[in-house]
Length: 365
Image 1 (cartoon, one colour):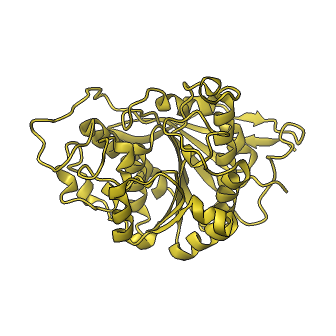
Image 2 (image 1 turned 135 degrees about the horizontal axis):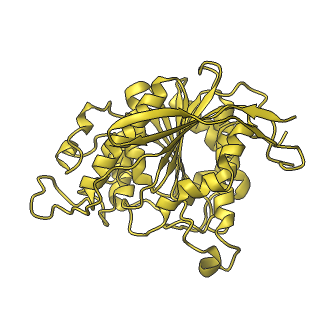
């Protein structure tokens, strides 16, 4: 059967939340033959606590400056062009397209002389200003009781998404699916790259996070506790991060745990740690093994298999408590064949789209 979807397309910038613009409705012709394995309705109610009609707000966060490579900023539009919105529509969600969040400041600011904080955070003024703008958009959409799906961009954008979600759902539980812990601070980070400091900021694990240029706003954000955070898929954790993870009291399941217990038990333990609360899923594509997701900037061998990658998203969605998500670190400019002798970057983009579908209710049967 065809689904007739009325879409609200929106635009946003640093100075305003999403403003809906009505476009003509279209018919999404999604036949069973076009989606042989992917398209089916969940046995359980999706995001059970969200009101009807259940709406997904898609927010683009085209940022690359939290890490050294160009390309992650291309991912939001690439995912849309490859049919992500059709995947969402096929699961029966109402769609609210919020466009890409952008800010006018394009300067690269290092603040080597004027910084008043310990350590090093590259391009912090831009990242901080951008994440404030993104948090305003995410907060506005979450306040409408929508499922907020943010498309990165590198993982630094999750400072903004989590800031927005925490203001609306302060008891949210966060599942961090990643090869890396991303809990460094400017003082502990070996590189100074801000995509590795998200949870250091959000959990307030530094002396004065608001002293970092660009982050004068962040003390207004609720602090994430260890009981609100669970990792899955860790396999490349900096020395300084190990003590921070323990200090915070987060649940941390490495690939060793996946090997030992199986992905089903690991997801079960992570969900048990978080308890009965709304959930946010922050999914870094580098959690997946580079054999299936090589178009990303920080590949680490020994990651999630194709089925494990989908299972994580499927099982979290099946709780009925998933209310927001990020999908980050897809880099469409990295040609897979040049890196690992496998097909083009279409494989990584296709995997990311499939994971997004699994977050929103796609199952095999």
